[in-house]
Length: 129
Image (tube, rainbow, N blue to C red; front, side, top):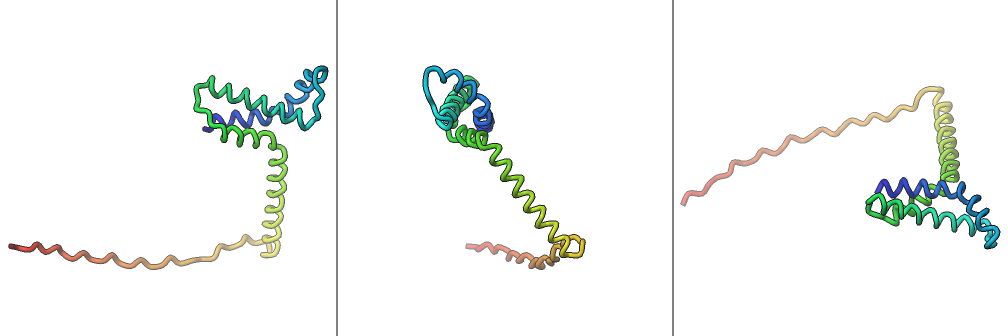
């Protein structure tokens, strides 16, 4: 399963680099818009990835391969979102530290509830006939 995910991510990430050479090959024969060419490249690379998985003797899981391909093709977008969220969280933590007078926020102390002693088991009486 992890092999399928990794191969899918690589296929999705390579789409933007394979798109230009593939477009140059098809320019003389077919006219395609840029989004259509990107989809064609993505589909061809996922097909190649599924062939590679079958050659590797692994169990092909198409859903995992597609999820990996989606992560790969939107990698730059997801990375920028992650960096933005990190910056927002870091700013919030800096604001909290500044409002606390430069000290670290203190976690509230919670005392654990006292455990009740275990119930004593009554001895089992055997009936005599």
